[in-house]
Length: 131
Image (cartoon, rainbow, N blue to C red):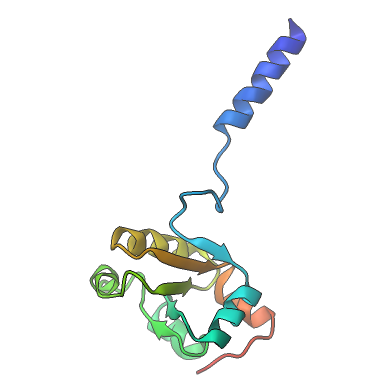
């Protein structure tokens, strides 16, 4: 009986464990800094920095456009993005960009990429920054 209960408990933990952030059906595909840099080199992506304008002014990815997630116009601006283009999102550490990905998905954007650990990881990797 003890082994049965242990097995049942393990099965319950497995079935009801929280989903991974990379789970299928998530609003965005999580990519690394290295993958993001490769996309920038190709030039075939819209780069959205969802931090505040002040954070953006301190430094951002080359070619990025600032679209402040908490600025009040995000949903309006998201509705005007091309639904079929690839969108690369990032924030400071990856939290705001996750929310932004949800909003973009709701606005009909289909190809959303979210840079893992955001601008902090980009800087830490020594990647180029525009000001």
